[in-house]
Image (cartoon, rainbow, N blue to C red; front, side):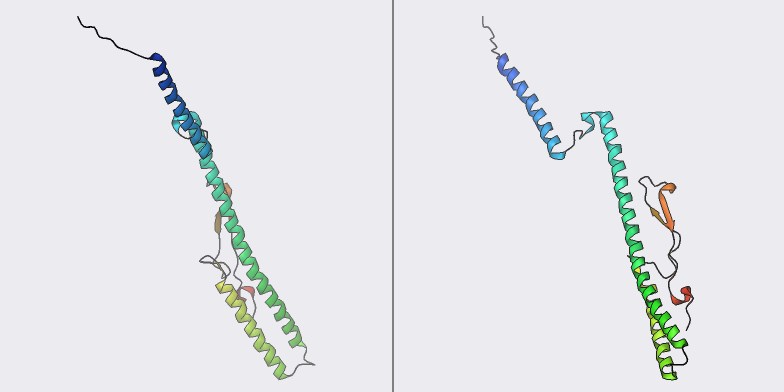
Length: 177
């Protein structure tokens, strides 16, 4: 009669199983360390994973809201720079007008020169007003009206700023020769 003999080494099997568990845990720990995330998949904790995804979505919304607000600030700074140039030109035009109104010291030649300079300054103002833009959007030609800037993370109407920038051409400013 032949007998079947099965040799098992329970200690070796236990050591092998423990090695596999340790390897799996080590891989997970390395993955968490390298990504900085404690919860990477739904298997790590379904409720916590859903919550982490919601928080990530909220953080992305806030980042976009900050970017939108920064774009708005840049747009206003662009308009402000151009308007400062126009203001400086307007001061020069005011000085020319006051100088030209002094009939005692002006002859027809100086008045004509002042008028020519005044007209050139008007053209400069009109050029600034028609060419000042942010990206591809003209901002000082009078068409930048009721623009909505989304500054909240959730797209709600209460998280918006609506603003307009009036035209800055000589016609819009009421300047005539």
